[in-house]
Length: 453
Image (cartoon, rainbow, N blue to C red; front, side, top):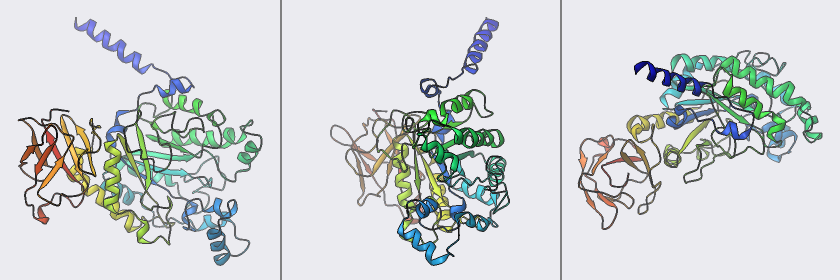
């Protein structure tokens, strides 16, 4: 019997491991998302490139200067640089002399993030690794003279348990090959064959990322980008085929429909459950992904605002990818660092309400505003963004019975409660000294033994 059982298990695992995906959206979309991603909940996005040198307006600086002719950007260049100055001249000033991958890794670890996504190449085309397909426009040839992707990947993988991921822009604003393909209505694929795909294969084989975050796809269909063929290779034969997750930005026909998890658009936060796993890629600086030297304090989201977005996102089944923009010298501004460490401190107290949680039957409470729910095992967590002004927290969604218990996560002892008429619960809040509060923002009430789990 043991031999027969072992044989059946062997056949099962071989059949699972032998699943291969065809280069069609139906096949690619059928691939299960590796479990680590849903359990992670929080990632850190890092936008760094030549755009970090002018550090003005946004990471779209070059496009807004030369194509869109945004007055603010044009005036900035006219007032501060000689007439023959080109965008390429900024590259030598992308010095990264203070970049320390180990310091970054320690900071990201302190944030509580389970994965990072680093911009290997943005729409400007500059690669943060010594790409064989970006001659003289990469971080080894000019500027830092370093393999930035390689240094960060090595530190993350060696010093943390964080999953390392890369962002890669499919298109480049001013690449002549892309411009020519666009003029032919994307009936030619010279840019894809000579630039985009060789870079992607190079990145995956060299750095083995667990996240492939594609962007810059929306001008052309996925057939032009050869996205389905690439993703089939990633899932079937790449060195990360068992662990990698991908997003949905693989062509204008794929956006918010096909690929791995859904990102749909920047700062995507639907506020309700979605049929597929999704991610809210958002910025601490409200107006830019890259660092802006002239950003006032009011442009940065507060820790309280970040946690509110994070909690809403997780309650509705999403992950939050929180962006920071380093300086051209390679430092991460203290405002960004403070926000990361604040979120990490909050997670140190409240991780049981977030890590490996899943959406409950109700996302936000029906009675009290700004209360969001998660579920972990058989426990329901009410995440309260505003501390009750009185001695009672009234919730409309939970159904209690005699065995129900309530705890404030991070505070010792059970809280007393009273059932509301029909449905709901009144939680009695004891007087808690300020220095005994488990955290400064967003408190998690653990409800066990509910009748509607």
